[in-house]
Length: 333
Length: 279
Image 1 (cartoon, rainbow over the protein chains, first blue to last red):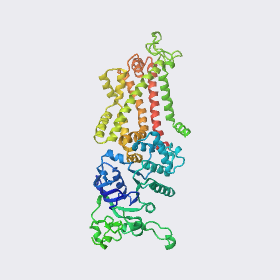
Image 2 (spheres, each protein chain N blue to C red):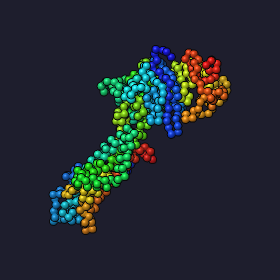
Image 3 (tube, rainbow over the protein chains, first blue to last red):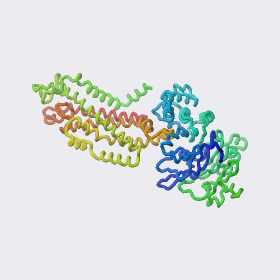
Image 4 (cartoon, chains in turn cyan, purple):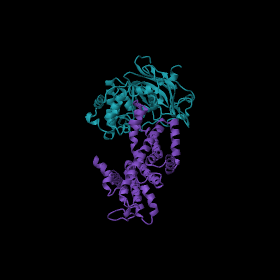
């Protein structure tokens, strides 16, 4: 991890939620990095801490229950967790921008989309209103909205879901951020629009030299866009590596099971009709995480020791790391 | 697009009636000198006192021989201006406090909501009476008394709207874009909660008109000879059985105006609530 072009470096991030039911360790010791111009995908089931990781980076952990208890987040070698709120506000949108899952409700219903983009530009750049409006229109053009000059005067309810997500992308990229965090950007869209939006994001990423942190549970999306993958489970990184090594050679039982649960094209003609593999059991209760591997109760390859022994990440070389005793036993401690 | 909005409004009968009545009263107040057949104060003629309604005096005359129709028309000015101004003041106070409570949270919220609950626990007529007793009678004082007593509902609604709208996705998105609290408050939240605040305001105007009438009836509000509906009722009280028209017409004026404003407020609320409008 000693490259020169690390843009975002998260070290030992722990974000806990203090509630009446106890402490929920939503993110429990995440360490990862994001290179310049790279697309990193964080994959995992609902409630595994993906979104909270993103919100922690943005400094927007839901208050007052949520709290970052430990860790450092370096952006260009500066620890942004140390920044005061006012400085974080300057960074949000300008250096790190975020797209949300719900394009239908993420836009202010009472403002035209053009003025929402120019509001963003006015917030972070010293430009006149006219310049910001012109820039908004050109942003709409960049996200391939037809007749952007006229569309800029439309209100969100006049646009379709895909169009609104394009507008969200336009807002997010309007200040040319270094990092774009996309929290399940295509989940609420239908499949053809999904492909278009992903395509658009990748093209704009190259144009703007932006790094993307993609949060998703859709492995199809990951395969299409990401260079590296982090698989998360119960607040921890469970496997990390580049797309090829994860898809070709998954090491963690959870990753293997995830990949098996995707329907494969042509599978039925070859092997006949057979049920899709599922992962039995449910995500563990974040309030009651014991010692030992948190995937252990659902794991088909679990050994007795898995229930007790907390296991660290094993480096398999080539950036492929995995948190599993099965892999650890093959190499020495 | 516009066509459908008109149709939507026309489908709500209470809203339509409310709008018509309110506009009529406002029109009456603005054009009082043109509409009233006599001057409400100067055209007193003791020769025609206590006359029942006739062609000459449509609503009859009072004990000093003044035309009741003219006085009712002029009375709309007092009632409406007191109602609108004091409610405007209430709305400003309520919205500012509500925004502070909802947005700053912590001890701001505790103090402001404590104050609001105290205000809500005192009947506003009693509170207004207390202020009037302190300030003495007079139109300006009525305005002040009402302007400071009725903001609690607006404050509560604003606070709850602020709290619930902070959960909205576009407000969260605005945070992620680096907008500060004040910017979010004014560009994202406030425009989206104007509707309910205006509805409460409309209903508040009706309430303020009633309280003004009550204060004037008790002799603390508008002072004679300025015509006001409450004051007219007060002087008519003694002749309730001998010349009922002196009290009936100002009473009807209060009734219809307040009814109109309430219908307007209720209809507007229904109009904005998508769950009701689907029926």
